[in-house]
Image (cartoon, rainbow, N blue to C red):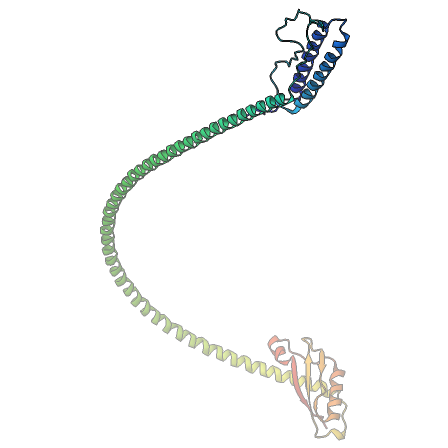
Length: 344
């Protein structure tokens, strides 16, 4: 909707045109005045100046008013019935020249009427635009409604198509499932028959195998009993032989231990310094020996203190005692508890 206020350039153009028209009219009127009627020319000049001032004020006021029609404002200074070429009669021919002044109220009424007409046009244009917008909005809503109904119809048709497709698919699936179930049942029946035949065959085979295994078990038991009896007899024989060997070995080792114990005692006696005060007294020493017979340690002994001290000194003095080369004999004599008595 267009603005009802004219532009400043349009108002200025209207004012300039009105002023130019007023000046042109005044100039023509001045040319028609006789030169000798100077007394009559002064009132006319003042009237022209007043008119020009009024026109200037109106032009300045119309800068912010709607643009007036392009018809220039004219000021008549003579009788309208006179032609432009006719001269104004001399003062003695008419009583006085009357100047037609511009009616300011009429101009304002005209401007107000123009403004009212512009406002009415603007209101009508606004109403027309509103009606167009309303119709456009109604058309848009109708179009949206049609599109919505079309989409709903399409959606409904699509749903029906999907439903039909799903029903066809379901029917095909049910048919395929039924055919598969029948095929599976037939295959299951055949498998069951085959399984039953196989189970019967396996049962017979298991029975035959069980009989065979039972016979083998009985045979193994018999053989095991015979083997166990032979093993028992062999073990008894071996045990008796081992016992004899162990007994002989033990006797040999005991003899060896006794022999080396006597040798060790003799070595201690040879290095032992004794006196009559030790007569009838004894001491038990614990001696640790190396495989070479080297005396690794000897304790303080248990018994008479003087006897133990002198006997310990004799052991340390000997330094190396006799030891068997037999590892088993040495093992039993590695740490030996020896009771010694002075030979008095």
